[in-house]
Length: 514
Image (cartoon, rainbow, N blue to C red; front, side, top):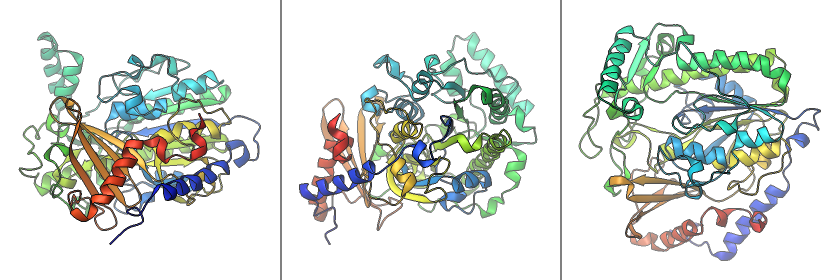
């Protein structure tokens, strides 16, 4: 049976693009939304690491996230938001520069975006250059990609906080680290290999954990920043990223027997073997060194439940910290003039397709949390089903703040969606993943309303080696690759064409003038 996309021709493509353009042109800035406030709006930019949309406001009733849900009631929840590459450094480099991984040539965890774009203006840097006091706390840029010129002052040093609170674990890791240093191992090797257990539930004060200590520091800073308005405060939480470590009280709010496990604990049928990750991240933690490959076996139900329990506990932990930030903004009477963005740098798999972690093109990895709360925006409290991308956040904040949108940005302002969340919008979101030995295979992904298509190329040979196609109307879990079905040949051709055209081809036509 033909679908609308299967009959899509150039005229229809242009019609859809034109409709999206009309939506853009009828948008408005923060100043028009808030009635032309006296002061430029403050920005609170919150990043959760691996924060997939497992939250109450996204319909997950098993997760306890009352404070994020409160923020969602004050903003717009984007139910179909996609990162541009599901791994920390490329994703953060992308949305913090407003450019896509291919443009900044960042596809791995170690390349700094300024290597190829030394004069690029980052999001916090742009606000700094426009009179904002810009401060970053925690993991904003990736661990090895600090960017001092983005900030008005050095990031505050967080003292007395640790990953693990169990003294035995901390002492053992300290001895192993000292031994590794004595053997000449680098800091990168030590941080990669000496990760300790994958979970911990210890009864310790929140301020002894990194995210609790970060929140203490942010609350102190908010009091100081009140006299330095406008401010851009970026807050990068370390959770719910592995290891799943949180104060015991957040573990205790869950009954592990009631935590749902992934139903599709098997690889997608017909998918190329290299498209799946092999638990590369989990495999570095104690007890999971020999984690089986997706094609060979799975973790036990007890292991899977423990890990997912830990992930939920970490979400509830950072949810509590976000609640503290919201309370402080209200106490300081800053909330009415502060735009808040909460996003996850990417999603991750929690047992889906027999995998743990991210770094693939599957929906669990590329779809992520995004909430934008602009005071007095007409759509606050609603959900937008529009296809949006994290690269859209930079131009959105510029427009909300009444700043000129820089010409180098490769995203689309979402301000019109803050007025009318269900309006016609762009027809695709783009992501990508590097897989295979030494990152030889590049998979480019285009997520449409119904279909998700991935095209794999060999970077050395420059030829297509595999394709994936998932029909989200009939297969929302992406369990069956239908790319090789003869009846989808025309559909594949059109999706491949749209993928080759790229993000510029699905933008409103008026935006292509620059």
